[in-house]
Length: 237
Image 1 (cartoon, rainbow, N blue to C red):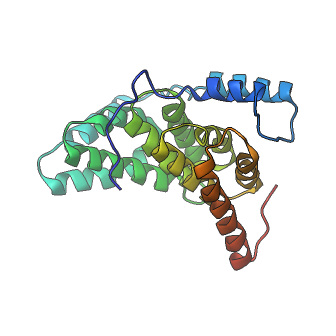
Image 2: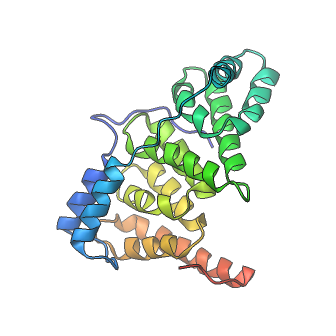
Image 3: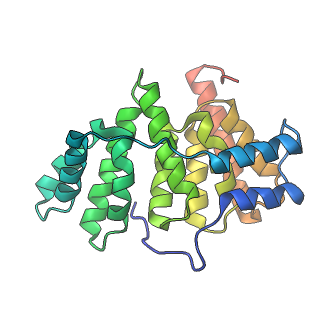
């Protein structure tokens, strides 16, 4: 799916401010009290990805990646995107400018590189890599940069985000931009665990959710229930 390269006039949604406002009006039903939610919101707002100290070799590898992703030869771009996987979280910040590149082919190559990094980090036994990649993706979602990079990050969180991504994705369900909402809903539908199910259930009851969006939330919950029956397992709590 091609992601629009547009920007929202006046800046992208401030998700932390949005959830703070929701808590004073039509807040979703949660198991924690209001003060706990506020403390969690402050922690989320202040939680930044840990700075990555790169070696000279790593810096060179990332420079080469960026050059090759912009190469005129599609074979070079494809090989570079595939080779990005083991670079992991340290390469993600450098990809953001390419996701806003004027050349569609470059944007697609950068999107492929990001996807390969995420899928590599999501492999079994790579918990530390997954955590680092998740941190970088969440920073993109909440930083208010380009719409293109926000949507790309929201989409990839379904593969690697886990419980840590759920509160941020739940906030995205409140935004007015339809593609952001749709991508967040898809990610919440696919993230395993009780936290994602609970977030969808709360969103269904939240009066601030757009009425036309509620049936899609219900469908996502239904698909989760049917999937659990099909695979024959219980959600972890």
